Amino acid sequence: MSRIRARGRLGLLLAVLALVLPLAACVSTDADRRTGAPQELPAPPDPPAVGGDRLADVPPGTQLPLRPGERRMTLTMPADYTPSAPSGAGTDDYRCFLLDPGLDRDVWLTGSNVLPGNPQVVHHVILFRVPPEKVAEAERLDAGAPGEGWTCFGGTRISGDFTNVDDASWLAAWAPGGDETKVRDGYGVRLDAGSRIVMQVHYNLLQGAAPDTSGTRLRWMPASRDLTALHTYLTPAPVEMPCRPDHDDSPLCDRDAAVADVLARFGAAGNTNSLLHLLCGTEARASRTASCTRFVDRPMTVLGVAGHMHLLGRSLRIEVNPDTPAARTVLDIPIWDFDDQQVHPIRPVHLDPGDTVRITCRHVQWLRDVLPAFASSREDRYVIWAEGSTDEMCLGMLQVAFDGR
Image 1 (cartoon, rainbow, N blue to C red):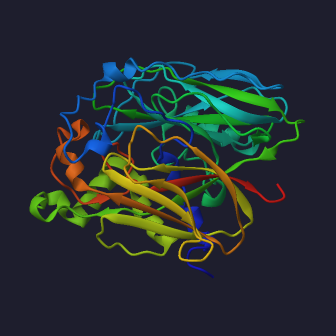
Image 2: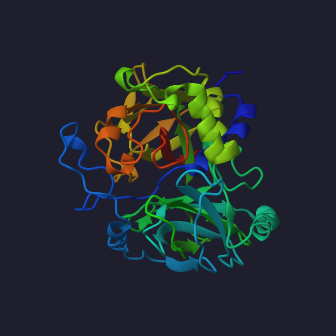
């Protein structure tokens, strides 16, 4: 069995993969919120501080006209929640909230818009479907935690939720500045009667904690409409970025110490990087470039593509069938901008079993010297995949339709 196709390993992974940023739209604004203009680095102007009040001033996302037969539903947290770092360390809180769309029939979801209650603390949001047979388990998680929702670094914590990176249970995602999104005409994501929705909110506490009551507005059509089902195919890669040779005095420049720090901040979800090495068949070896090649195991058509890194990301590329006559680059971001992570519709690309998808990310430590988010942590550290805003990731997200489904 191919080491990349090994399905037993996939079940280990996907507590990994819900921790990621926006599969749906996230657009830039005139007031750069986090990174400074990336194309002007390494000689940037003095970037502004990342103030929560500036995020709060970002106007709500544009609402798009409904198509024939589409409707909207609005779901909101039942009460406010004040975030805090669950372990007592770090500046990030991932919290899952169980939302009930009250479905007495199957529907197609055809678009989404997140309604952040408090943009000072809401870093990003991902929506996941909970099938009817998992609702009781989700309700137990919700009831077993104090306050609204439950802690969910690395995923929803619902058993079996992420057993396959080829078909993740994502419905949509959002980050500040993101507009309402809609899928292509003729497509939708199926949601069965009796299903619930988990809204995973990543709260960032760099500006302090404050109460939040967020929600989402979903576009939908009846299941009787003849639509083609959309799925999310994920291509993550482990990150192993060393300190710069002249900036390696920090204790966290030691890989073992950096791994221990991630585990202390995120618990079991801190093992993600090791699990990604299993998925990709790679070894832990220091490099400023992260890469993973996955083999496709079912026929599919790729309709859209997005990439995700954090603030130390510099470039990202996704290729299909690299190093062959059929090679094609489906996403090329030569200068990464954290505030521009929208899905890119592409000319449809059909992939057959045995075809490959490769993601390649490049990260750089010198961005620590110039970005305001690192004002209190300028020292280099050995960087691996982790959930925090000042940690790193390398992820590709393909919007696909499987043949015959």
